[in-house]
Image 1: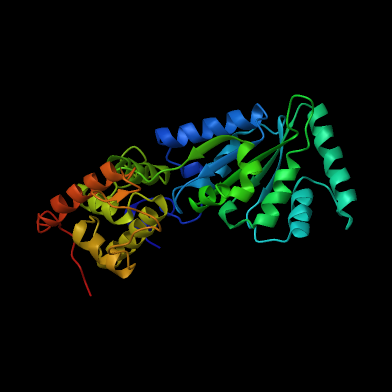
Image 2 (image 1 turned 60 degrees about the vertical axis):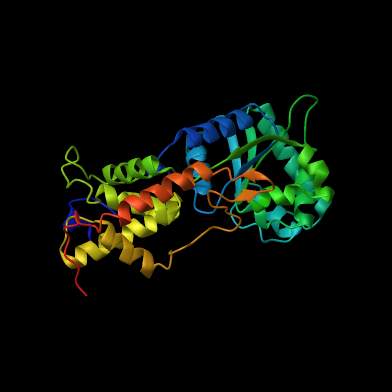
Length: 323
């Protein structure tokens, strides 16, 4: 709707995971490298955990684009709220096994044959499970048993579990100790810092033809506005996208090419993000289990940004606001 007004080719802050627009921080590069290594070296179980909206699904899609078809076959489960029978059927169909039989013994035999054929062809078979924190104990036991497909020195099936931090709690259950032992590599995604948020916004804007080099207008967010976006989004890319997209729509309606903190503040209130904390978060200055929160430095920086942004009375803001 606002693309022509801002001189860009597409929506820069889409809520759909888009690997082509992925902004790679050092943490993201580490996660992709770790996943790639685990899969191609056939390490077996890998876990990718992170808060909702921090880019896990986008990372998985980017990784699947990067993996050469000559070296892997993949099966993807995006919704794990399935019975064990449904899960196995979906897994097999996505591996290209037609009409899985009803008999569990026959299903396992057919899957084993597929994995052995892939191994003989020099390919890694990879099962990606997104939203893995929603897996039931029964289904996790079925998944654990799939790791029994192996040769004398390699796993025939590589399994990537991606989910929110509750996945870590789930895997720490005493009755899942055998599964936890089989996890070869653990990786995490993290919220962006203030500086990373600023670079993220510029990156997404450039990807859709914005900026002088792209022939479009420079990105319209002032530095104070981006500081406020970093604060209110907690550095979570999904929330950054929601705030930026709505701010662009508001600015378009007002005929304004510059977006300052006052407009961002209105968007934040409309999205009901005032005072938002993701489940389990601990702000700076609080203690969790006797230790400072891992994100305390980020929180301190964001609080400083808030003081800086809100203490200016937004005098630098130039866009008109219309009711």
